[in-house]
Image 1 (cartoon, rainbow, N blue to C red):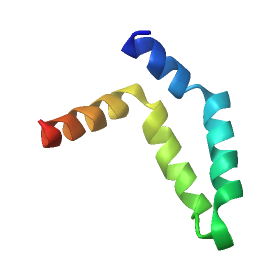
Image 2: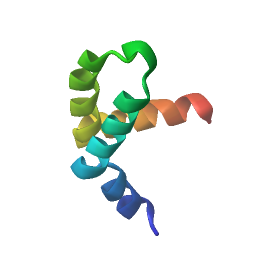
Image 3: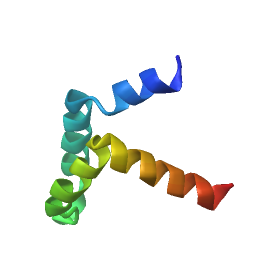
Image 4: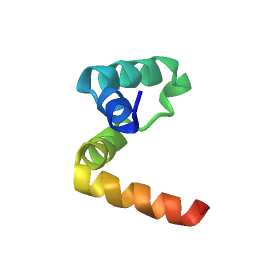
Amino acid sequence: MNIARTEEILFNPLFTSKLLLMALAGAQNNRLKTELIYYVLPLIYNKTIRDKLLKSILKEYL
């Protein structure tokens, strides 16, 4: 499976909703700040911003 196909699967809204459900169900004492979801998800789903974030992360580790 190539990287583009893997990204399509990982950034699928249904898959993301399942991950959020598991994260919220597993959070102890409601320590997970649900407000952050509204800040993080738009960044992840915007291809331009996602590409810039990936490039900045790769620069740090290379």
